[in-house]
Amino acid sequence: MAINLRYTKDYHLQGVKLLVHGASGSGKTTLIKTLPNPIVLSAESGLLSLASANLPYIDITNMAELMEAYSWVTESKEAEQYESIAIDSISEIAEVVLINAKAKNKDGRAAYGDLVTEMQQMIRAFRDIKGKHIYFSAKQERTADENQKMTYGAAMPGSKLGAQLPFYFDQVFALRLEQDADGKIQRALMCQPDGMYTCKDRSGFLDAYESPDLGEIIKKIGG
Image: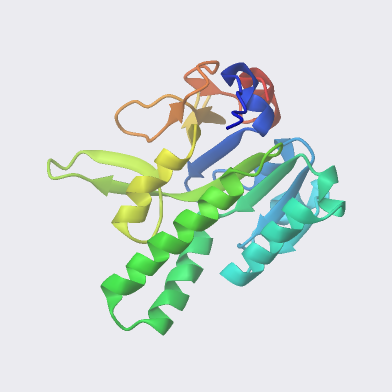
């Protein structure tokens, strides 16, 4: 049996896969224009912030359209020109999937089970596209544990799906808005967890906070 050995030093050549969660208005969509040569798969009506960048996009209103877009970006000659694929947002897509699942199945638990299965398949499909950077944006939610400790992470319908989501990615960032000493709002990508925000950087090349420029972050990782 022939074994095709690969080496981890070349892993970044598969493309960098990122999940970024942030509060409404924090600029998750605006981040897309910092990606290397992106195409946008948009499930939200919030692309005005990208108007000046004049980026190509595909409207996504249901899972069928998303998977049709997947086939196009992985199989068509035209899609080869794009280095990055931005999915904005995975939270919105999951909500559409859940609505469809509930319409098909009156058992609420079964509908949520269908949601988890369908979203897992979709996330893996896009995440595993070789040679392209994949950016997933997500809404942010605040949750409290039994001791009323607050945590912030990607918002997804269903606690099971939300808890699983970070495990699908090597890079999970929180887009933070903080006020500096002069009272000005500064944006930064939080890359290391602090017990409150869900973040991780498996590359080991990023600082705790990075400037909100995905292209520079990809370079730093080595992509």
